[in-house]
Length: 199
Image (cartoon, rainbow, N blue to C red; front, side, top):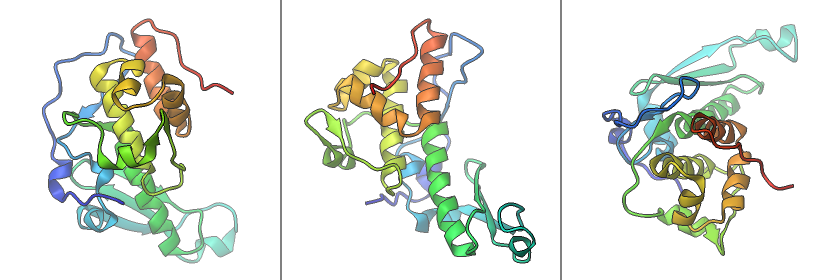
């Protein structure tokens, strides 16, 4: 289940003193816990500007007659997300909120001080984590994994802290390619080899 945290979940926090060793790697923005990816859709509705637009694409002229595309702008963080593939405005709205929460997971980091969350523990058993990338909990899980990796600056240590094997951590990140790409960029900035999931 999602955790409704209210507006404090998106309060900006001071940037850490930690600096990236390479200009090719972008230091993420830190925000106060709980992570914005855990915000419920109901909370996000109060924090977002919603714009309905017409988008071109499959369907030709018929698709452009109605403004079914949705663009969200999260006011506290200025992060945006959009959806236009469905003919239904409501379906696009649902997709846009899901993508917004995933963008939170990828772009924002929070400090973790109290161990794995209840949600994480409910998904992690025997060194493996079970989560479908289309599930509503997926952004929360990715956010938690990336927070630990950033905080510990080591994938193996982060995996151990979360009760995962390193290979299972990489497999999880590979479900969201931009997440694995970000971790690999961090590793490359430190002269470490990139990670690839086992086939």
